[in-house]
Length: 158
Image 1 (spheres, one colour):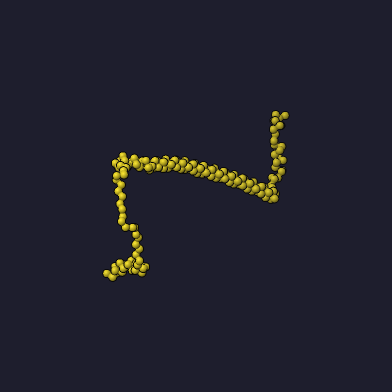
Image 2: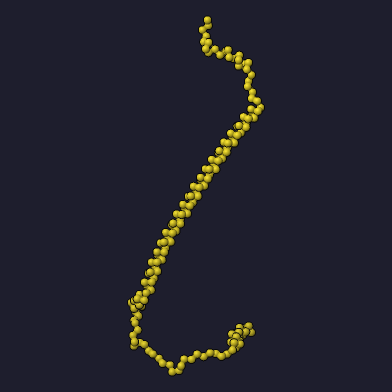
């Protein structure tokens, strides 16, 4: 007997493979396969597009929030500046009022300008012998207009 290993003798299957015709897919099956591949490619593209839209929306939200934060920071900084300026304004108004008080003005007049208060000996009263009168010019309106226009006319006559 031959000492060949029968368990691994594949030569008996070769004849079966040669007898069996190659499997060809039917045209309908090929069309279904193509449709399935196209459908799968469409789903993949749609998924990628959906993910891109979601990512861009998230980026937009993050950008908007950063802009809001930046503007809020600017607003609070300006409000602090307003508060500081209002405080400085109140201080300056108080300083101005204290410098403009009657006592301060009197002190400045006496110490810096060398002025003295007036005493009763410096007051002189005068008497007027006639009564106070107000005289109105009784000229009519036409005469007054003529007097106002006369210098203009004389200018043009020259």
